[in-house]
Image (cartoon, rainbow, N blue to C red; front, side, top):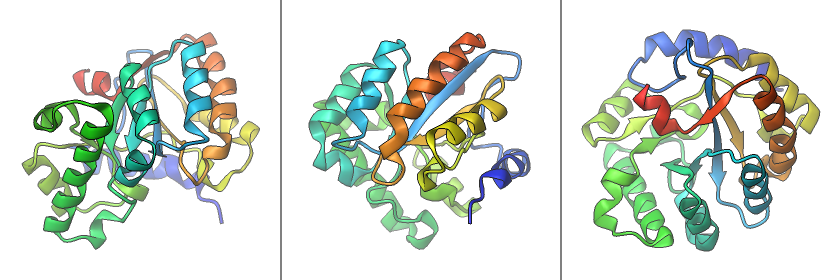
Length: 225
């Protein structure tokens, strides 16, 4: 069963309920953020990077620590090209299933993997890597409180086309186009689930959004708004 029609309603309910999370940007600015979860992936991510480079778009990537360790050169390339990077957990374990100690260790382990792959001092990681998107969007008020205590920034979404079930490139693109508005925070996937189509989706989606006058910004830029 696909839940794509439900996500816009969830967004409208959850955004005011949990205002400490980043759900979207400002409605009066024609800026949007394109984000990718579950990577980096040895086959799916590189073609995506070529599309982003072709259209001069800077995106945001929420990485799994285990995938960073498997593909450190790809992670380094993304970092060096100036894309924004956040955390998606070490191995996509649902945050509510972890104890607070396990969650803190999970995020720290992922930060360390990113620092090693991207070749910067791990001591700088708390300043460089602060954004966290919970796997599957699952969190609790207790988890949000802990993330803030540890100086992380929780990031969610406003446009979820459910690309991981692979409804088809055209359907995914159409879902994004129908839902995107000023400030939209769009979620796609370049990992093992859904990543097969991500470059083709981005190649169709980006020029159409550019034609509509949208400017692509990073998650960090949305926070600054």
